[in-house]
Image (tube, rainbow, N blue to C red):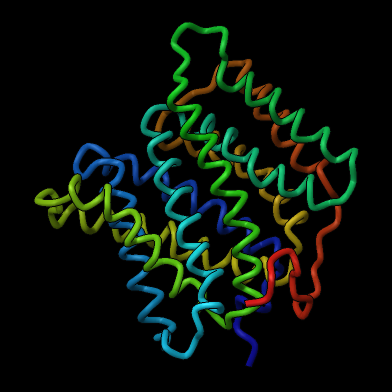
Amino acid sequence: MTSPVNRAPAWSLAVIAMLSVQFGSAISIGLFEEIGVGGTAWLRMSLGALAFILIARPRYWRWSLRELRAPILLGLASALMVLSFLAAIDRMPLGTVVAIEFLGPLTVAAVTSRNARALMWPALALIGVVLMTEPWKASLDWLGIGLAAIAAVGWGLYIIITQHVGDRFSGVNGLAISLPVAAIVTAFVGVPQAWGNITLEVFVIAVLAALLLPIIPWSFEMFALRRMNKTAFGTLMAVEPAFALIIGALVLHQLPAAAQLVGIVCVVVAGIAAERIGHRDPHQVDLDLPPA
């Protein structure tokens, strides 16, 4: 019997994933003072890894090192993305960070479209990012911008590798491999920060944050990417900066200035216009990376 997730339109899975990511990010900010940015990332990745292991019950010995290469790379990219993103939202508004981070998937959408004109859309998004960050102000946080840019690279790699892993591993087996890798990587900075500070309240909030990110969105994104190409997925992600701006305003009371509103419109328009093709044959294997 086909599961509800497989019956749902691919775009709806992506939208649910985006909303889940932004609510999870907003909740995570409340953990920074207790266990630090690294501790928050490590606890979320560890809880996510445990959940996927219990769900998939993977038999790691069944796969060769060559087959495990892609999900291991996905784990490394995921750790890079999450650590840098959380560090950035600790310094800058959520909507601004997501606008910068979105340059990653937008660039993937433009480049993989094989249309030279599509490269103009990352340029428009960059204009939007400039309006969002307001570099003419003396209080510009260059470290926060740099961290968000690193997260953009991580997000772009995440999209490319996630589709590759989804093509080659059934269910959430790929995530049951990649998440433990991400948890181990984040442990190097997370365990020293979180050690001795994990109370029952912190743990409960961390469980909720882990459910919202990575458990729900990364599962849904993997299923969506089995039926969408990277261009379509990167384009659909255009609405995520707008979601981040709205949730940042409603939940975190981070109200944007007029220039930032114009900037977010530029980013969203750039993403929507990057490419209009959407459906991907679920039986089509992506050849951007060598077979596992």
